[in-house]
Length: 146
Image 1: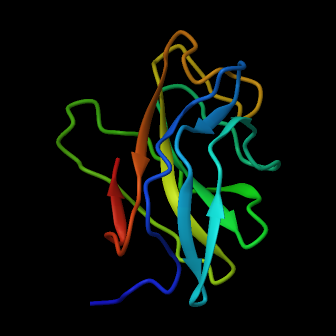
Image 2: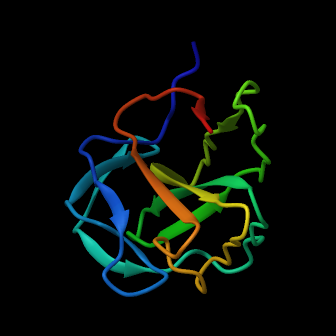
């Protein structure tokens, strides 16, 4: 079993942000990077990191929420997948394990047949867009089901 060097020790609770097109953490979190402890207060109206690829119709993608030692919040985009119409083919996103940040959660965005998602432009609760939120504490799995 592989263990993560960087991990949250308390749950940040990732959720949709108050302002359109943003996300937030609703609880303060303590976390460890390279063996040192850090703390980040709950923060609202966080943007996605610039440069992410947009999702087209009927696609799904995980955006992993990270903290660095300065408490800056960034996102890492996983692979964009097109789920099978029957649901018979299951997909998983590999949870990144960066050396300079800790992954504290994920936002899995799913678009409907007539919807698209552009990070920092499309709201996470727009028509045809579903955001599902995950939180990671301690040593968690290597993949996230999509």
